[in-house]
Amino acid sequence: MARALIAGARTVFFSLFLLLCLTCNNNLVPVAEAIWLTIPGSGTRCVSEEIQTNVVVLTDYYVIDENNPEHIPTISARVTSPFGNNLHHNENVSHGQFAFTTSETGNYQACFWLDSSHQHGGASLTLGLDWKIGIAAQDWESVAKKEKIEGVQLVLRRLEGVVEAIHGNLIHLKNREAEMREVSERTNARVAWFSIMSLGVCIVVSVLQLWHLQRFFQKKKLI
Amino acid sequence: MEMRRAKVWALMGLLLFSWVCDVACLSLTVNSVECVYEYVLYEGDTVSGNFVVVDHDIFWGSDHPGIDFVVTSPAGNVVQTLKGTSGDKFDFKAPGIGMYKFCFHNPSSAVETVSFYIHVGHIPNEHDLAKDEHLDPINVKIAELREALESVTAEQKYLKARDTRHRHTNESTRKRVIGYTVGEYILLGLASTLQVIYIRRLFSKSVAYNRV
Image (cartoon, rainbow over all chains, first blue to last red; front, side):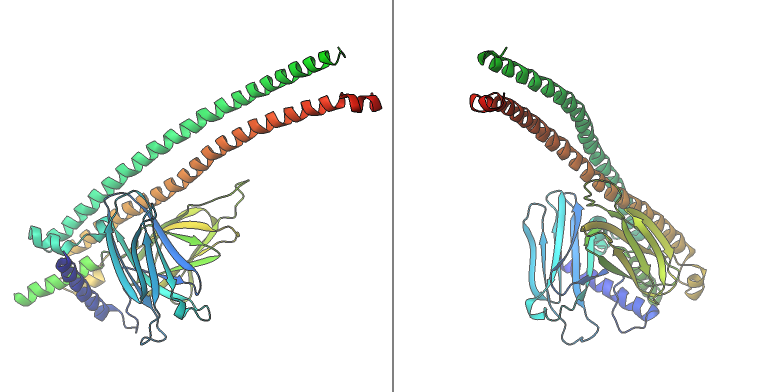
């Protein structure tokens, strides 16, 4: 599995190199797959996503610093599951990666912060984040090797995977909508019931008041 | 023949690689300004995406100003602006190669959570076909098909983000209904008890002799 990942990574980097040679000529090394975020000088930057169960999550993160490429600042990272379990924790690194398969549906959060040694002057950092889940995280190299397909066939196989992912997403959306509809209808029924009940509570309370005061005045021989 | 096969492989690798130019549906908390950067490899690429403000915790009214969304090209020009919205889709043709900046501005003091999705799509055109004789017209069709599927995926992510926001509203409504109703009953009971106690005090012996 790791070997396939390394082989896949090597092909990706080779293709990236080809692409770079063909198109760009700047001194950075842009990775087209990732987004860049800024980490503030103090405090953490967190990104999160709501993910279902049994989804593969594959993430790469790296610090980008054009000013001094020899002395790259280091960051710490932590990934937490919806129930608070620590899935990945790394300190004092300038790049890292993590991969896991989700075991529960919920909000998965990845937080990054600057190390205390680099927190001077409140200067912010740029972090490149390559966050892939589900079909985007699939290793197509190993699929190509296993099924012995290549070229256009492999591309079409990928498209087929995307279509299956779309279908799965639609079903998931439909289920969520059904749950939400139930909550809505229950709330609707509750609003009606509670309003009528508040009218009833009002009447009951006023009757109790009157009865109590009548007894009180009769006791005081005022009535 | 070997060279040709190697070239086809490399080209396929390129095609496969230029596939994944998007980011998953991430959520970001926006304090006042938050920016996300994405690199565009080819001029004329279609950059599309959407964003939804998910954690919209307004208490009284819906007169929240919304958030502003600004896209800046690497040359410094503003490519797209969306003001005062709580979620929208966007797409534009990239005028140049480079790092594009996607910024969310939050005018209110409350922290908002924004869920966004950005996709950079490239379809090889006739210019690329003419440049490289190994690039078949079928690659163009496959690229178009891929982009169409990506747009469906983008719509789904938008729907999912809006659904999440709707969920938050529903949950908040449910909690408010229960909380405020129970509070209302307790206050009603308390007010009537206080009324009774007050009236009893008015007619109590020590006060009555002095007043009534």
